[in-house]
Length: 232
Image (cartoon, rainbow, N blue to C red; front, side, top):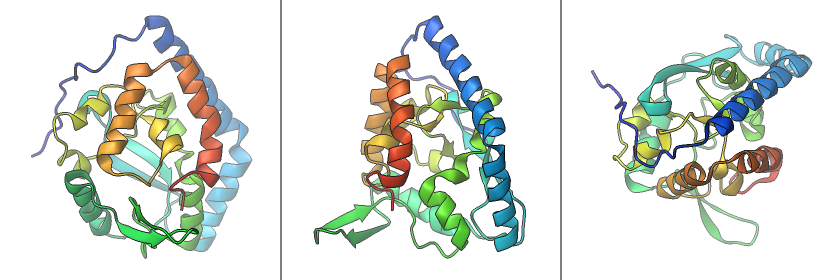
């Protein structure tokens, strides 16, 4: 049975204790604001999920890989039909990680052919689920993971087990810190660059992480969610 490595990469910088402490405090405050302060929005989303497709409100990804290879259960609003196979995404992630292959190419507004590094036009996704994914609202329940200390507001995205199986040793460096809901990659390029470029962004964040950088990423995330490069 495959077991993620728990070896911490040397790239993990010795972040000052005050930074980690303040970052955790901010994470808890933001999580409470989102989960409690935006409860009416979450209730509306939950009702629309139930009205538009049968099944549970939440999707639980049971084998997410976080800091130092630790496995945890990640929470999201359900965006797919119940019983949908993961085959499409498993195959895409394998090619994305091992070959930097895009899912497809599209013609942009300027008539240029550009790659898209995410599964789009997915038949497994409900119509309302597509809206949630496009806006990033499906990830609101991940603040439960933030409260549990499994994730942070800012950091590299966690990896699924089937993604992690294809990681090279230098790829695992991106998991030397607590994973986040948003990060440098999300506000820079989102789904418009290959896996190696995503890893570079994550390692850049780890090397430069600070409260000011975290704040910048948090403030830029709403714009990136709705209008950012690769947001289609």
